[in-house]
Image (cartoon, rainbow, N blue to C red; front, side, top):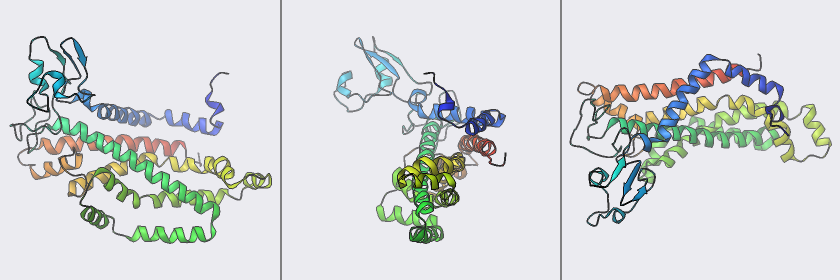
Length: 338
């Protein structure tokens, strides 16, 4: 049997997706986001102090993707391989990334201007800005995507249970959401990081998600409340369908579409939140590459090293604009009034 999208999506959904792809701004956003996503997620290929491929004593190795022991390359006085020095030996052939610098590698060239050696210059510790920008973008995108996934998973689950069962479940959950909404977000982040003596990726992410699922939950709750007593749900109950079947077969497919249009805005919100926390010094711990950290350095050294401010600003703006263009196109295409 031939594959057909019509077997998986309703005619209305297919028509909406066609409307999405007909919009020029949707393609601008998709191309811009795809470029950033591919470059950042394959960062080791574009910026790394280790070669992508090296031939040593007739054997092929891939140091950019695999951590090899120093002994494998004949190094006995160190646990770390200096691949640049190794590549200069006779009989060794290596292919390095276009930007041969690691984001954590410190050089003697502190606050160096953009040059052929360091495309976007170096920061206050002599680290290559290009490398930190690429890897910092990957951290930001990963954070934004994980933020969206976790906040929507919690929000959709709670909102669906609230709207479907209503009653006391709905009442007490609404009170919990009200409590979460009145707590000062930044103060809690600082308090949790201080108590746990950690400002790691996952700790920061979970604290932010704690404050972010309530909005998604409220929107899905409203959708489920408007659907739960419609004719097809009543018919399913009369036919003996259980709660699980009614929720996953009849309610969620009809309630989730408006929520999915918020996905790009949730991702951009997560990216912006991490950048703000890092800029204020309450985000990820050094020396993790971070757009917010580069912004903070750019503000500090704006008189002497303006490139430190320009590069993360352009990268962050590019990401947020691309994602928001996708979000605006989705919102227009899936607008129920159209």
